[in-house]
Each structure stands twice: as structure tokens, then as C-alpha cells.
Amino acid sequence: MSEVRHLVLVLGDQLDHASAAFDGFDPACDRVLMIEAAGESTHVWSHKARTALFLSAMRHFADGLRGRGWTVDYRALGDGESEDLVDILAARLRRHAPCKLVLVEPGEWRLEQAIRALCERERVALGLRDDLHFMISRTGFADWAKKYRQLRMEFFYRMMRERHGVLMDGGEPAGGRWNFDADNRSGFGRKGPGLVPPPLRFEPDAITRDVMAEVEARFADHPGTTATFDWPVTREQALAALADFVEHRLELFGHHQDAMWTGQPWLWHARLSAAMNLKLLSPREVIAAAVAAWRERGLPLQSVEGFVRQVIGWREFIRGMYWLDMPRLRDANHYGHARALPRWYWTGDTGMNCMRAAIGQTLRHGYAHHIQRLMVTGQFALLAEIAPQQVEDWYLAVYVDAVEWVELPNVAGMALYADGGRFTSKPYVASGAYIQRMSNYCDGCRYSPSARSGEAACPVTVLYWHFLDRHEAEFAANPRTALMAKNLQKLAPAERTAIGERARQMLEKLDDL
Image (cartoon, rainbow, N blue to C red):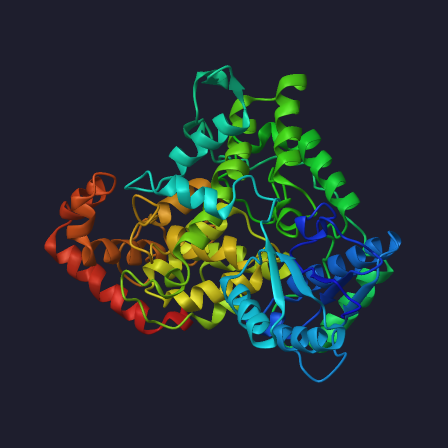
């Protein structure tokens, strides 16, 4: 009979001491297994800060488990020949010979399938438990989705608000409206954002410093840097980050959540997604803190509702869509785009100020907020006809909060419309005028956001009109984009020809923009 009853595998994005994987844990006969595998950083060419965040948080979490008196088999980088997570797991299963491998649902379809196949091959029982971090199960989401011909986040969001009693006054939404999004689209104007309270910085401790040094040495050719690393890597730090956001930045979060400004990477954003995706924070406590600030301190409902919608609405919805549509989501390519990702996505070395700012910030911090991702780097990739799989790999690689369940549907479905509108009602495209209105990125740029053709024309603007021209019939048939098609039809034939010619020149030399 095996000495180990349950071998409990804790993955790098499952750092939750209340995890269902620990239900019924018996230190006398159960063991925890945690695995650092270089393959998880080379599966996509991961940003150094992303790798450092995962490894540091994992090592701190393992110390916390040992503090409970639990035995943790911790496999660090380089401890053995293989650097593939599943190969390492196979060796540990043979070493421990457990009666059952226990874990909560992984955040990647690929990894879950590989673990299932391994357990079948090794004849080890698999106890795959629901991830109770989330506020709706995968099965629960699938059951909800069966009721709708069109899957839309707004329908799901209202159901979740009602089910969990969030921002509700009896049976009605607080403030008489479900959604204050129309109030949350303001730019800063020419004067800029003014004084913005900076988020808490977390000075790297000895564990994190060791990780940073190891990452810089082992993954020296990877993008980004750890020089600015200051992310929360423990639950205590994550709770402090949450309190800091609610106290200092939530009040103005909503009003300016779509705005961008050079040299201001954080603005009024929460900077909590990485901690949440590692499971250092639960969505329930994050929502509760925001709602309490509204009720007790009178913070603006538009900001609190906008933040809550991202957590209980979009985050939960995206996770449900990922599991509903995998594996076909990974191969989705509605427009048949096949161009290579420009090299400057990895360096920021481009003449477009907006792309240089967003990518430069990403390489420095491993972070960009949702509009920078959707309407700058994401929109350009769509307009430039980049192969979706290359774009998806880039997003998974460069952001510290990137886990596939959240990154892939956001990129394939939202930014690239690669799934053909499975859960969005239109492609999210706009000319350079949108970026000019929502930021100062266009100031001093070599390109003019108002020019549609010619050498000085903004690539975003040129490719936007070219994209409309290529898909005019589709845009004209969609009530949400019909106006775009009508605006295209107002252009003189000669101008449409000039736009097409300039677009072709740009598309042939994307690396030179």
C-alpha cells in the first residue's frame, strides 16, 4: 500500500490557502507538490518579470505551507534533467506512488489535457476539483450559456449581480442602472491627469531578489526586465495593494478608466489582476472592499460599478468562454490573417508613439491597462492582419497577469475578433483620432492621426480605413458598425484608392513603421 494517500499538486496560478485542493488534507499521509519548470517560461517567450512573479509567489506560498507543518515536495528550476512540467510530474508520481493525484482545475486547457493523459498512462487516480476561487463553475457557466443564442457579457453580468446580491437594492440595481459605462469614457484633455496617487511598491525581499537574479541569468535573452519589479508576491502584500487601491484610486477609477498618458503606467487602475490570477486575492473580497467603500464612504457609484463589472462580470465571463470554446478558440481566425508579428512588438522600436509608449511600458513593467491592450497593441494587430496565434502568444508572454484562460479569449475574441463575434457584437477598431482623444500619444509623433494617405499618414488611421474597405459589406450589415461603412462610402473613389495603396505599402513593410 502506498505511503502517500494524496499527492496535492499546486500550480503556479493556484496560490490559495483556501483552495479546494486542500479539502480533507491530512499531513500524516498527504503531500504537496509544487513544480518550477523552465518550459512554462519558454512555451511562450515569457517576460522576465512574469517568470519572476510566478516563481517568487510560489516560493513564498511553499514557505507558508511548510509553516503549517505540511510536507512540500518543491521542485526548483534546474533540479534534474527535464524542464517540462508534465515530465517532472510523471517522475514525482513514480517517486511518491500516491493513491490519487489531487488538484484544482488548471488555467490552461493544454495542461489539463496533459495531466489527464499522464494519470491514465501511469494508472493514477485523478481528483480534479472545481476551482472555488471563481464565483461560477465551468459547468454553471455552460448551463447559463445554453439559454442564449447570443452570448453577451451584459446578460451574464446582470445574472451574477442578482445571484450574488452585489450592488443590489432589493431586486433592482443600485442607482437604478445596471451599467454606468457611458459615464466612464473621459480623456484628460490637454493638461493631462494631474497628480495621481501611486500604487504601493513592494520592495523585493531575499526570496524575490534570489528569483530575480536567477531569472536574469537563466532567461537572459527573454524580453523585459526585473529591474522595476515591485509586484505583491504574498497574500499579505496583495491585501495591502487592495486596500491601497480602494483608499486612493477607486474614486476616480471609473471616470478615466479608458484614458492613457505617457509616463503614467498605472493612473487610477487597481493593479490587482496579477494577484487575483495567482489566487492571492479572491474576487469576493475584492468586490466586497469596493462595495463597502461605496456604502460607507460614498465613493462614486460609476467608479465602483465599473470596477465591479470587470471582476464579477468580465473576468468570470471570459473564464467561462475559454472553457466553453476550447480547443477551437486557439485556432480561430475569422479574417484569415497570416502576417508575421512585427519585430518591434518585442522591442518598442517603432516610429508610432502610441505603440512605442504601450510596448515600452509593457517591457518595463509587464503591465498595460485594458485600453492599451485592446485599442493600441490589439487593434493594430487586427488592422495589420497579423496571424492571431502569434498575437495570442505575445500577450501570454509579456504580461505578468497572463494566464491562458484570461488572455486567449480576450485577445482572440475581443481584440482580434478572430472568433467572428462569438461573444462580441463588433470588431473593436478605430482610427488614430480615438488614440489622440484618449491620450497624449500623438503629440510629437512623426505620423498625423488625421491623415488617411501619404507619407505622414498615421498607420492606425490608414489601416483602419483599409480594413473598412476590405470588409465593407460585413460592417454595413451590422447595426453597430453600419455608420462606419457609411463614412467610408463618403470618401471619393480617388481617396479610397490612395488609402489602399498606402496601406499595401505599410503592410509589406510592417517592421519599418
